[in-house]
Image (cartoon, rainbow, N blue to C red; front, side, top):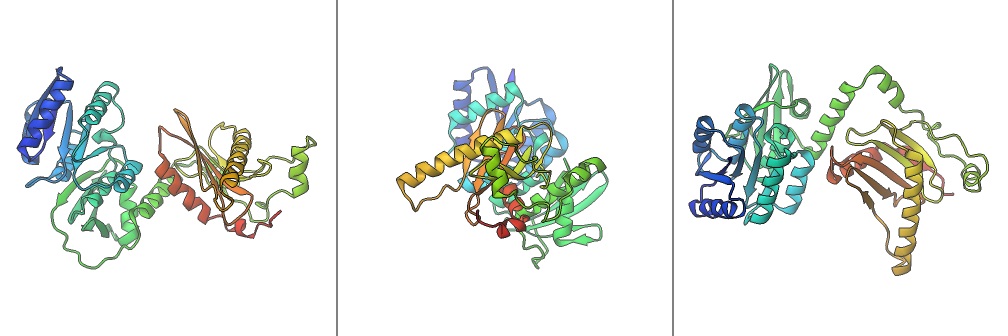
Length: 381
């Protein structure tokens, strides 16, 4: 029989949750624990199939319980609850990991549905898939002050957090931002939490999103083969210049099309393909991709869709602008971002929705845009 453990310091809330889950899924056995210490004792003595834990508890809180689970029960599905999470912070949490966090008062129907999905399909949301970045997002969301001791394959590092803000890090001889990025590249580390932060000076002034993206970039670069690096090598700005107006018009008119754009862009770790596309013609001006994504065809269709949307918006209100279009299917998602400062051009990203999500894709797109200095000098046709 499936056994669910609810960790909640409010006894009446724990009973209410246990009763509601049992009514909806009578095949589940529901047990409760008032804090992290009791939960770890139960988990050491008997088999449990899923944990639902509050984050704010006296004694060993939910974050400390998560750290214990990461080290001792890494394959156990876990969901969390909090009374303090906003929609924005929960979206950020979801962008960096797969753990599910419900805002109190919880929607019990949604909780039971997600539990059932996790137990029946082994979906993402397990502690084994909880990255250090996800854990830090929980710490940020709960505004915790703590010191995190991180270990990974013999390496040790320390992260210092004050009121949910990462203020310093140490790893070997490195400190500050460099140490934090190094630690964030470690996959599946063990985490030990101390409830104090002795560091006073704030040595890190970058947000979590920046540090995580830098860590992802380093992971991606380390995973590339020499051949991959050669393909992804950026070309000069002269080579990246767009095709002439006559050449693009000839493609539309059916005459000999210009040669396809060469691979000019670094593909973000979360993307299948990226491109700079001319809105009027659908011509790919610059590109980068992994695998056999039919980038030209998809870019052309994206341009047509964007043109229709631009026309529709202008008919409603000439002062309005299309800022973003998202085309989503079960496995793939396309992100279309018109460049408001560069008329007639849009950024196009294709990503696997099973591997990342829209929040992370947007962050990657912003980082990519900051590298395209030649776009600002593109002549208006």
